[in-house]
Image (cartoon, rainbow, N blue to C red; front, side, top):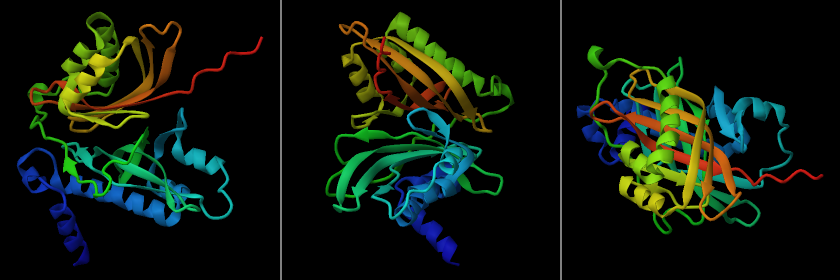
Length: 308
């Protein structure tokens, strides 16, 4: 009896979810995904980062340190630190989506790092996790990629949650072509090519979904197509390249992801080539066209020239 009550209470705390039953997105799976994320955070606070990450990551789950590594293998190869953890990491989902098949989804929201000795926050940022449904019905993290932020998300008030908008597109026999993850990797290459010929702002205007999010290390997240385009229009970026490493697709072919390496050159900064990793969530719009729902990236530390 307790589990149904908890599930109902969770649904009522998420604005707009009651109306999701009229869309193609499964409401119960979205609720379950958000609760899995909250359980992950609560476990991290209670038991520490190592224990919680090993519990909630999939066997093939990826972390970026700063390069992508298998999370579980990385923890197994690194000895557990002695004594109590010097910091506490906690987070809260504020935005999420799940595929129509209920097998793939993502969540994002603010995180806080607390110094356990000083008992005060020592860092802020936004986590981003892609989750995959396992054979036993549980949700596990498939990919995790956070970005640091210069300030807390909403000082003085708790963060509020909202689900991503539902486009209403649904796969059928007539539109089931090209349903494989390689399409998403090819779209990454297309965005790089179009950015070179048409400009970055014009390219993202073509590919961004209306409620897209744009996360970059060292800045607050940008929400919505217009704010992202305004930001990109002010940047002096040229020569953007994307080199996809891997991609994945929901069984319903309405949601997927890609990640890989990027590089960009800034105007008036000869030789200052920025390199890093990006992760994208791709989502079908109402016409079945693939659009960017999440775009997350972190720059790698500058390379140190080799000594002669």
